[in-house]
Amino acid sequence: MTSWEYASVITANDAQSHRAGVSVKLPNGALERQAGDTSSVLNRLGAEGWELVSYHSSGAGTWGFEQFWLKRPSS
Image (cartoon, rainbow, N blue to C red; front, side, top):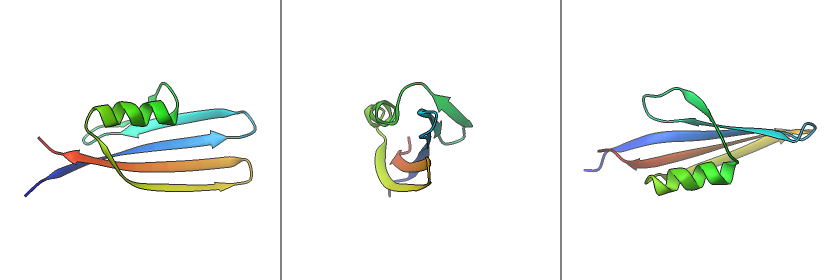
């Protein structure tokens, strides 16, 4: 039976300042801010064996939020 480990990527966008923050929470780790945009962070994680399993997006007015959940087989 395969065991999985999970991670999440959180992006918060502020349309007024045009600034976005991308943070990653890996297993047994703290939430860490990442350099680059959402696409580059997800591509890097994909190259490390992470697979996207779920996505949620919401926003109100000029503010937006996205969360991605990823998994990979645990070693």
